[in-house]
Length: 176
Image 1 (tube, rainbow, N blue to C red):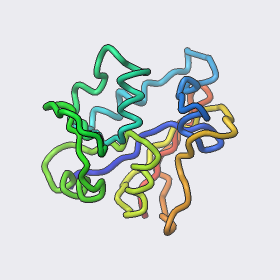
Image 2: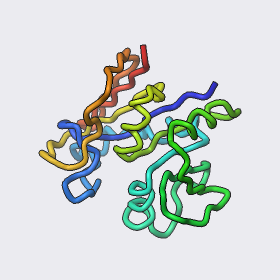
Image 3: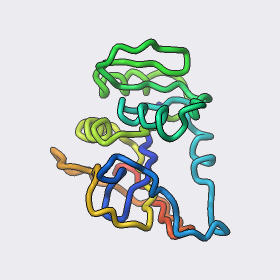
Image 4: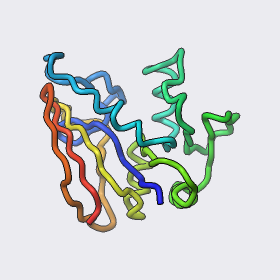
């Protein structure tokens, strides 16, 4: 069965976006000699992405307005807006847990939970995330969009990998 992986970056104080919703702060401490391309490593094992509307909107309007950067993947955008789907980008109002369970039962590579916080929280509440790959960025934002909000129950994890580069600490946990 396919694995569901949350691959995301957050500030040291637990935010995935600043108070204005921006992610312009997503960088290390400036020593480019230490940069490691964890993204390219990660996506080799992925063929499907799930993201919420706000994440999708930020990608196409702010982060990469001219080119769909996830062209090698099938992307499901969870939204209640009426949008025309394509082969690569599928807009759906399907229940996120039901969609994920259906996708996990299909053949394929791993499924990347790309964001945002609401989608992540819904999947965590149903204990549907198998792996948490979190890069902690060396910045304290003080406020913004939290990665982890209040949860209905605890989720026990096992640390299986750590890596530090350019001030960033990558933590990989799996469910116990």
